[in-house]
Length: 325
Image 1: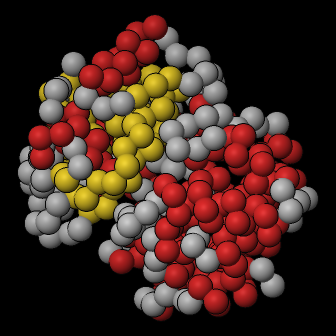
Image 2: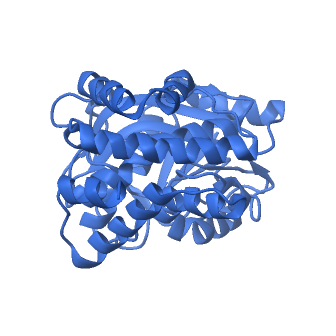
């Protein structure tokens, strides 16, 4: 089986490096995107990223690891180049990238990533933190036996599992990703930011707003690596000061040390569009459609947009004051 990974950012490079260790894998990036054979720290054998290619020609399994602004073009081009019955598997954050992939691929699955990866730029390594693996599922809940077999094929190279409720798994990942806006706006890692109880309150309130939207839509949170829906439910029900303390202590235990820069902050530092509109902004749009309130997520979107434009972070004090106003 030939595999293509489209998107040469931190996640794309990490997934491609892991797969290339065991399988015929091509990494597809934008023309001129640097560099080739970047070592990836944190994966077995100090393995490198496959040489960068400009086409997914002949691929049977295509992982799409771009950001949202590049998703449509990546799916269109890769589907035209890949095998006629290739499986398109978006690995993006957010709730429904599979809908875009389905416009171009005859067969589509979705992948939820649990990988901490930071591309350091230039000829330097992609630094990998915790690797929980990939969670695969079907957009409508079902996958054919052939598609399941193809997805399980990658399990020898990178930890993976199947879920019968991809939408629920994506909702769980979305709730975890809401913190990306906090770290992006303040220029910190999640460990640094949520060590502060006032910032942890912001994180809990953002999750509570998103949880209310998920419940109103009838979504059920599903387990993914690092994220237990039971804990999320607990954080939505505890008194706010207690919930903030629980979250802050959990982060202190599990994200000790320097940590890996969040993907939204990485985009800001690289001068690229962020995905905040598909994370916190998605919560705001869906809340508005349901007649629910989402003031904390709305404030976080505004903060990230401001920081992206001016190029400098806000303080944690300012973030907490504005988000909790």
